[in-house]
Length: 200
Image (spheres, rainbow, N blue to C red):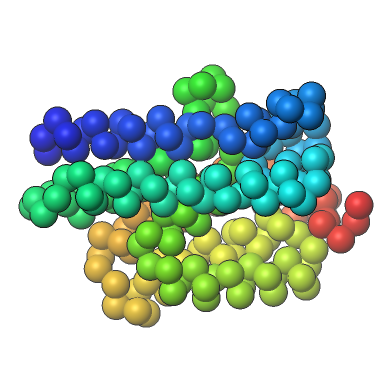
């Protein structure tokens, strides 16, 4: 890979590391890292600051997942390593959100940023998994469960749609990372102590 490719990957990480939830919450004098679930993502922002702030955080986190891949594809052009660079940019963006250099490598769980990556890879799979997410959250009341099931389904949808192997690989990596970051939630789900969205 040339220096432009490495710059794209590094820039993707730095963009992914921008903690939009924390930036947005600053205007409300609420440190979301010390309240609610202490997570910097849209779910905790919504709980603490309301739906409007939560939706704004969600949209910004999705955008920072999609945009680096889109721009990288435009910048690097038609080169042999094109797919590899795009895949690494997507992975770097999610890693940036999960382990942001700006916050001492303590970040979010990557669901919304991963959604942005999946939107670039194959928008149709996002629609399928969104249905699964809504059903899981609606039936269980647990956003974490919906996120886990929906993210796990993405690589399967890509496979069933006969998408290229590089897309399946990057989606599988991101899904595994999302599950890894949700380890505490999984333990609470199994023990019955996870917070339900239905219970305020």
